[in-house]
Amino acid sequence: MVKAPVISFATSKGGSGKSTALIILASVFAHEGGKVAVIDTDPNETVWRWSQKPGRPDNISAYKTRNEDELLDAIDAARASGHQLILVDVEGRASALGNVAISAAMLTVIPVRPSEPDGVEASKTIKAIRAIERSTGLEKRYCIVINGLNGAIRTRTFYDVKATFEQANIPMAAHLVDREIYRRVLMEGGTIYDMADLTEKQLKTAHDEAYLFADNVAALVGLRPEDAGHATPEAEAAVKTAVNRAAAATKDQTQNEADSVAGEATRVVEGASLSGEAA
Ligand SMILES: Nc1ncnc2c1ncn2[C@@H]1O[C@H](COP(=O)(O)OP(=O)(O)OP(=O)(O)O)[C@@H](O)[C@H]1O
Ligand SMILES: [Mg+2]
Image 1 (cartoon, rainbow, N blue to C red):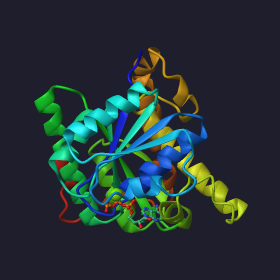
Image 2: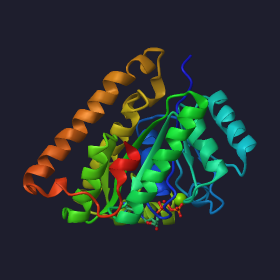
Image 3: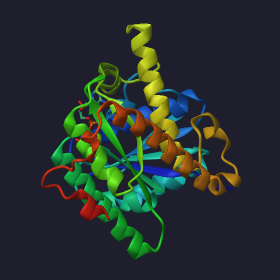
Image 4: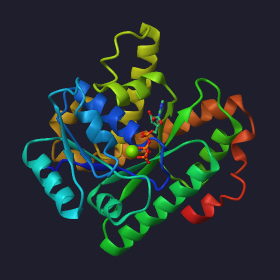
């Protein structure tokens, strides 16, 4: 029996979109029929508060944990009760509990807003993950998600941040745009599939974006959103192919965008020296 993968959402930069990205991923998997556990380790309880609002689907269970033992117990309990995917939210600063969450996770998702300080903190988080890998001898995957983009407009800072991570060969999931629907889900509860009073186009665009993000992230733990409920012993063996698929998808996305802004994607963020740190 394959153990349900744990994905943590962590970066020492506050407000980068960890809780939002977690809720988006939980939304997609639950919508596809998967049984998902969300575990909030953040004293601010953003995800826990969201989970207590009306509209959380029955196949999303929520836990809040305040220390290492509670976190590891919650992961065991979530696995024992048949959850196929376990998502752990981490507070927006470096912490011992955050490191335990990263250690317990197969994959850490690192949201980055297109800004220099976000890039620097993401780079520190990657260093922390690598230190955990060295001390435990276990492979830890991680990926960046550039979050909070301004609609169709791609700023120079966006290309700079993206190029920096690409040059360091850091996997990137599909970007997330700044959308009212994501803000509202966090405030009002429920999932991205419950917001009926938006236009069909707004909903479809957000749902498509969320699915692509979830698909890219899931690939890194050997799952697809639509078979969240059917992890098999072969799933882990499929990880390598899936990682390549995600890398290729990111490359395509990059190519398209790079074509439209010829040359811009090569400049690195001034002063951040991310590629050096992450190399
Ligand atoms: N893609 C997005 N579209 C719209 N609003 C967003 C998006 N991402 C984040 N936000 C908003 O930005 C704020 C911070 O987001 P969120 O709480 O997810 O960040 P965080 O990294 O979890 O923060 P913290 O470090 O405090 O835990 C929230 O008000 C959230 O609604
Ligand atoms: Mg948060």
